[in-house]
Image (cartoon, rainbow, N blue to C red; front, top):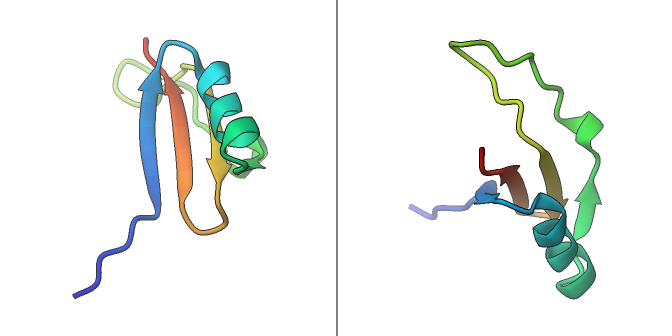
Length: 67
């Protein structure tokens, strides 16, 4: 069996800084936030922290704010 990753989620206190590392330094491409519709956060579901996404074309980096 060959395993492949679709995405990796990183949690950080500075989403923009980590995003710019992946895009500016490593050359990954932006995935627009509009590609990931979000439901409103409630007591039971959802997440309202800042998020951004980057990709190398195959694997995605999901970057989420530590809340």
